[in-house]
Structure formats: structure tokens, C-alpha cells
Image (tube, rainbow, N blue to C red):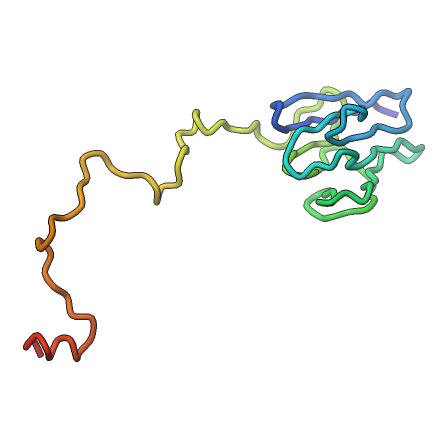
Length: 151
């Protein structure tokens, strides 16, 4: 059986966590009592387990508040294949053969991409609001147009 690892992307950044051949169970969650501590919003103290069996590894959700997802689907239990994406809370993980590249691109930091604000919230340099009275009055409907004598 090949050796496997998890690529974990959480509040601590990106790291690889080996899944030792000698372990039958790997516990994941926020608690420091877990084998793999995952720091992210929505992760339960004891979120899920990875169980090693003769047929391979599987994920078992521990009735977590926000569920566990494999390949984008909520699961209580699911067999894992190399390259499978896993999400627990806001953390993203990938089940990989040891040393294999992650199929997802590395995360971009907001500072590097320049996307600190949504485009609609950005204000162009030098822009000013129009001066009061500088815009023509626009009637809102036909009655308003008649009242202003513009019919």
C-alpha cells in the first residue's frame, strides 16, 4: 500500500501532514488532542476521522456542526482516492499520495493579487461627486414631465 498525506490549507497556511502506515486512525479538528489540528472557522473540536483499512483510507464525520465534504458533497462516511478534495469548515484539504503535487493551485494572498476590495467598492483617484445643481433635473414619469411643462 502506498503512503499518503494530507495537504492542509487553513489559518496557519499550507502544510503537508503525513498519514503514517503505522496508524489506523487519524483524528482531525480544532482541539489540540487531535492528530491533525485544523485551524479554521467552522471546524469542530473533533470534526472527523481518517480510517485506514485494507481497501484504503476513508473519512468518517463525527457528527460535526458543519459537516465534512468530499469532492464537494456532504458525507458521513466516504472512501478516499488520491487527489480527492476535502473541506471541513472553511479549511481545504487534499488526500494525496506522498510527494504528489496538489491538483489545486496554491492560494493567492489578497495583497499579492491586489484584490483588497471588491471592484464596486473601489474609488478612482481624483473622482469627486457632482456639484449641487450641476446635473439637469430628470422627470421620473410622465406626470412629473407635464408639471414641469416638458410634455
